Figure 1 (cartoon, rainbow, N blue to C red):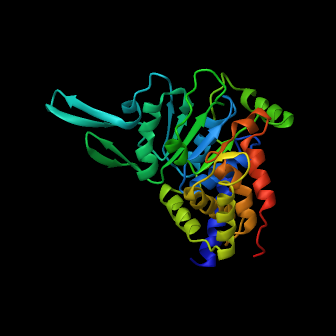
Figure 2 (cartoon, helix red, strand yellow):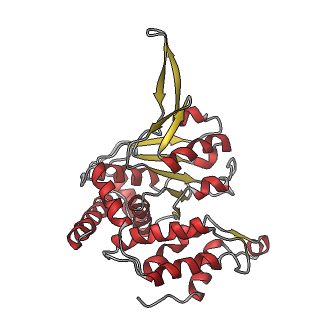
Figure 3 (cartoon, rainbow, N blue to C red):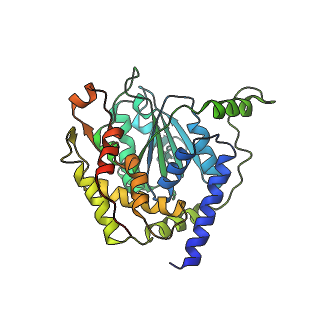
Length: 322
């Protein structure tokens, strides 16, 4: 991969970020992490209360690369076939016809995924891992690039089902979205209410930058960014430390290290680098690992949370000088 290709890729990614910021007020870190997920060909889980602009962000992202966007509202009565599709009997032809579900898209917003029981959540396992869906024993591939952005309400809220470990492991990043600052919230309220009827989402200001096939090229460039062995070692040390850290009852497995390297490569390109630095690892480590570890109950009782413990790990492990 030549320097010219990487420089062009950096420029395109910055333009995509700029277009999204035309309609998404504030939340720069969230936008950055969603872009890291896309560039690393990963899936993203976003946790936060409803009404913080998650759907708008996904629609804006889809528009920047003329991708297809589908939203599925997860509810307790959602069936797996409502997600993946099913076989229908056609009376005219007297044959079974496959009706593809909303999962056949580029960007899938699985809204409030933890409102549905495990059976419906599991309908995404195959497509997130293999980019295909099996209907009546026959595999169907989804269009590429394919990315699932799932949102979930905090578990404390009523009527939620925790995601099983196998499902959580499919997500490259878990992003936590918080309320905007007072200034950002005022700007948001003005933007939504000036000369508008209702509160429909508006992404007209976003211009398409590239085509879906260009996103695949960007993903290949990211996958080939250089990483020094000392940076690999740093990432593995962070992951291995979670397995023996006081107060962590379940540490991250080897997939955590793989995810950390993939995400750090995308973070490096987004930061304008043509190689991965220890800072790229450190900056994305919490979002990559927070859903792969579990705290001991006594720490939770004392008011600690996973992010606090992960930041302790990052502060104790010395970063290499590259």
